[in-house]
Length: 204
Image (cartoon, rainbow, N blue to C red; front, top):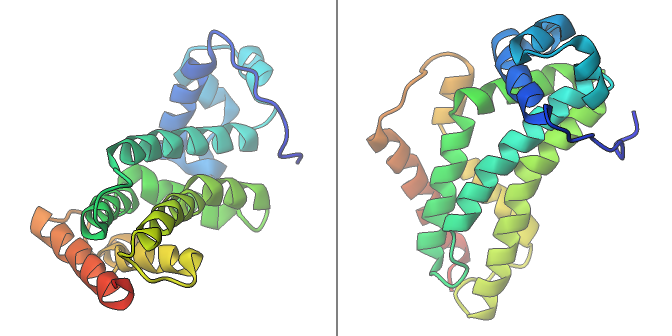
């Protein structure tokens, strides 16, 4: 499928997206039917198809929009002039909050399950998730390096290292259904550990 397909955004665009999000969250990608999505969105199938030619395109738009909204909220809170410990703590809390959210978990599972058949699903989720984290962190790292606060040769690798550190212990427990709720202390412990380890490696 051509990734450059233009999405029509008319009067009922958001209505369709909201309905699709509810159905995808409840039934997954494979289990979600166009009939159910149209009913949940309160539109006709003809209206739905006038916005999205197929279910894959609709799912990618839901995932991209949701990730974009969450990312915008996090980015707005980051001050590129703040010291690394402060910026990384804010970024780490956002990363962990997203991967432990119901939406984050379901999107991850759906993309992993469907990527073999529909590689564009995985690519779009990557671009609006891990890829976006990488771009934002690298932009901050470049400024912190210029200020003499960090010493990093490979900023792309460092960005992904930090993101993975923020998922330590809790994310695997969550994905395997061993634990579904986490206390603030548990979250803070992981983020603090991620920041401390990152700074031990890259701080000047």
